[in-house]
Image (cartoon, rainbow, N blue to C red; front, side, top):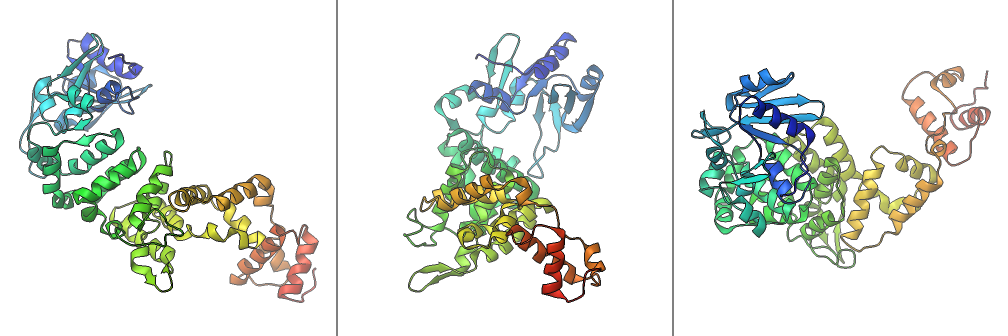
Length: 440
């Protein structure tokens, strides 16, 4: 395996070995190296315990000392260092009730999937495979190590992890592992909302999301963790606008047109049409009146259930609520259009609109119109200096209150539309529109 090893990871391995300990690269970084990918994280497995690791490095953090895990903090980055171990019984479907020091072979046997059970010796260049992971990488297969029923029962988050790895890598889940996964779908309810949220976010943003969503649906996991999303399956749409098929098909296809989306954009893409099932009306044609507003309320409930941050809830809710606004940009007043274009979330809203169109009718005229408007408007036109302030309104005889916002917004609208361009014209505009008090 021709491997380009991170300098910090090499430093950790070499430091441990220099003092007589075993040290190997382990887990996901070895998998990615074997696949020719650049690892995001570098993990080291060793026979040194946390106290021994702490004595060798200036800055360590005992992130899981009871499981033999330390975080070594170097200038190059942070590196997880874990002692080879054998796990005792799992009593809470997440962590072993006990552990004991072991060797690399036993450590590999306790891991989740064969492709994650590999070790690599950066000194000799040898790939150590005790679980058949290299063959499964070659065959593009996700396979549980040992008994798949036992592996999933140990930590039910592995149900989602199997789907995520299959989607991200373009692998298939081998039959026994798939059958065990499907049989334990309901057990996902025992996993904390935060862990489910994080795993789903990775599935939606790492690549292969369309495949991941399909596997979630086929396994029953989608119904178990996101029943509101599963409800989009079979909801018909007008072929004129959605030749691709039902709402669920559309949402899956949309992810083919997102390139490394942020977490907020990815969740907004998943949830943007979530209001359609409950708003569907069949008359002369299929309509979904108010599905954007209803969808935003439903998205807020889902985000709350998954313990998302307040900022994530705000952004996702705004994108879902506003995803139809771009369809009206040609009819907007100039001031309304400028206000939309300068919204903090507009770049992601425009990207959502682009993917939405490409996953349906394929027309990008409104997307291109917005791009043209953004290119034509200079920064000072998007956010021109205010012509008036609250102090100016007080000088005109207004008492501070809610009317201030209305007046200042009206002044800015006129400014954005080119009807006002200086202080005196703004004063006259306010006097004429809101009062007859002469300027001081």
